[in-house]
Amino acid sequence: MDTQAYKIIRAICEFLEGLFFGFGIVTILALVVFVFFKKKELKIFIEYAVFVSRNLAIFYMVIYTVSLGFYYASKEFDFFSERATGPYAWAYWLMLIRPIVFCGLLQFFWLKRIANKMLNIFSITFLVFIVSLFSGSMFEKLVIINASYHRDYMMETNQFNTDIIIIIASYIIENSILFSALVFVSWAIFKNRKLD
Image (cartoon, rainbow, N blue to C red; front, side, top):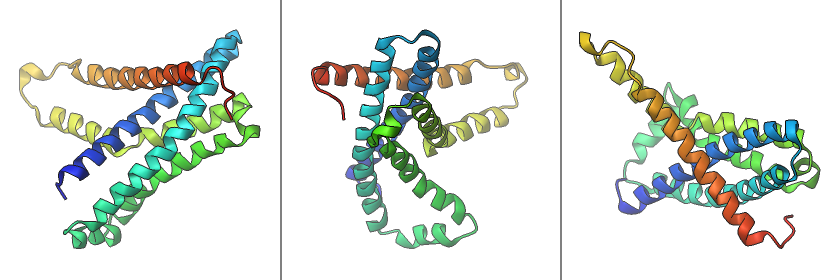
C-alpha cells in the first residue's frame, strides 16, 4: 500500500480536492460581489471558474478511479473489506462516494440552462463547497489540531494559541489563490474562444 505510485496519486487527489475547496470560496465570493456591482469582468471570471471546475472534475475522477484501483489491488484487501462491512461502514462508504458526488454536481455545468443562471451556479457551487469541506484531509487536520490542544495540559500553554487560526487561514488563502491562478491562466489561453 505504501508504494511510491500510490503516494503520488494520493498527493494529486488531495491537491485537486483543495482546488475544489478554493473553487467554492472564490466563486461564492465572486457571485456575491457580482450581485452588488454587476461588473462584466466578474461575470467572465465566474464563467471561467465554471469552465475550469467542470473540466478539473473530469480529470479528478480519472485520478480518483486509478487511486481506487491501487487501493483495492493492495495486499491488505481483507483490512479494507472489514472497513466496508464493519460498524463504521457508513463512514467508509461516505468517504468513497463523496468525490463522486461533487464531481457529479460539477458536471451539471455542461448544461447551458444551468450554467447561464447565477442562482444555479451559486446553488451548485455552495453544495460543492460543503461537500469538499468534509474531505478526509480537512477532518484529519481538525482531529490532529483538537487532539493536540486536548492533550496539552501544561498551565503556561492554556491560553488561546493563534496557530490554529493561522493554519486555517493559510489553507483557505492558499487554495483560493491557486484556483484563481488556474482560472486566470485558462482565461489567458482561451480568451479568444467561446466557452461551451
